[in-house]
Image (cartoon, rainbow, N blue to C red; front, side):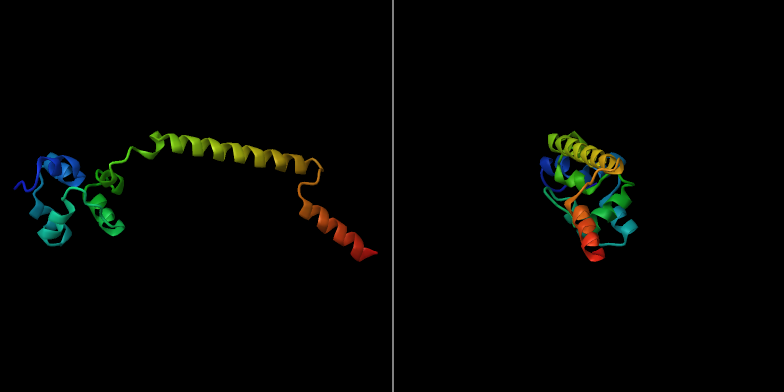
Amino acid sequence: MRHVGTVADQITNPLRLWMQQKEVRQTDVAKSLGVASQLVARWMREGYLPSLKTAATIERLTAGAVKLDSFLNLPPIKETPEYEAGRKMVAERRAATRAKKREGASGEETSSGERRSKEGRKRRRA
């Protein structure tokens, strides 16, 4: 495989890294996808951020080894503090909603809208 670019290119681009690990040539990738080798070269540049369509093509080619997230150099989402905080918030809201539904099922009125509709029915009957 011909190495073009800096050492950083070869390390930071996940497609280039995958191709080196699998010992796949750029021209072989291009032929298997039916695209020009210049397009594959563009995908292998440092800092390249593929479109969703291109990312899907690369993911299909690599059998899921290289995904869009791989190009973003982000940690897996479940490892971030924001994810954990969001997960806890959703769980708390779901628990609160379930508790309100249980209270409503025991005969208590659950909302002002429900009260208004009962009052409206009473007025119509009178």
